[in-house]
Image (cartoon, rainbow, N blue to C red):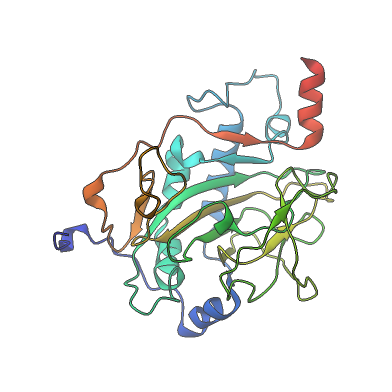
Length: 305
C-alpha cells in the first residue's frame, strides 16, 4: 500500500474526556447531552419533513399534494433508510465535526493500535409517530458486519426520548464478548416491528436511556438494545448514523466470484482520519431511499389497493 499522504487526513476536534472513552469501552454505550444545538436539531427536523413530502427527486418518496398536512405526511413513516444518499442536509450531519470527533475517540477504542480513522456506512431517519412500534432486541453488527467489531451507532435525539414514547433500552456490557445472539420471529406485533428478535440472554440488567433533544447516544454494534411502542401523543424523531473503523472492510454482501475475506462494499463516506482503501474508489451512493412503516399503515395501503 502506498504511504498515505497528510492531505488525505480528515481532522476532527477532541470532544470526549478519558472518563467518557473508558465508559464507552466498558459499557458499550455513551450519552453526550447537547452535542447538537437547537438550531441544528431544527434543521434536521425540517429536512426530515422535506424528505417525507417528496422534496428530493426520489422514487420512494414522491411529491405529496399541497393539501396533505405536514403531520399527515410525516406520521406515515417509521424510518427512512439512507436519507444521506439524496439529502445534502442529512449528509452534513453524517459529517458533523463534533460527532465525528467523538467517533474518532471511541469507534474502535477496543483495538490497541487504532489511529482514530472512521467511515460512515449507513444513515437512518426515524419518525416513530404515536402508536408506531419499536424494535425487539437486536445487535446492529448482525445487520452491518465488520472485520473488527467496530460498527457504532451515533443516535441523535430530535425530540426528548422518554419511556412513554419509546426511548432506547440497552443491556450494558452485553457487547464485551463479541457474541452475536441468535434471532427468531417475535410474537408481539403490537409492540415491535417486523424485524427479528435476539434471544437466549438475561434481560434483568436492562436499563432505559432517556435523552433530551440534542443528545447523542453512541452504542457499539454488539450491544443488545431495543425500544418499545410510542405510547405518547408526539413523535420520537431520531437520526442515527452508523460508522466503523476505516481500516475495517465492510462485507455487507459477497459478490459472485469474490472471496469472503476480501468482500468490501464501498458505498461509504470517510469522516475522520484516513481512508486506507481510498485506492479502491467509492461506490455511488444512489438516488433513492427505502422506507419502513408500521403494520397499521401497511395494512391500510394494502386494503386501499
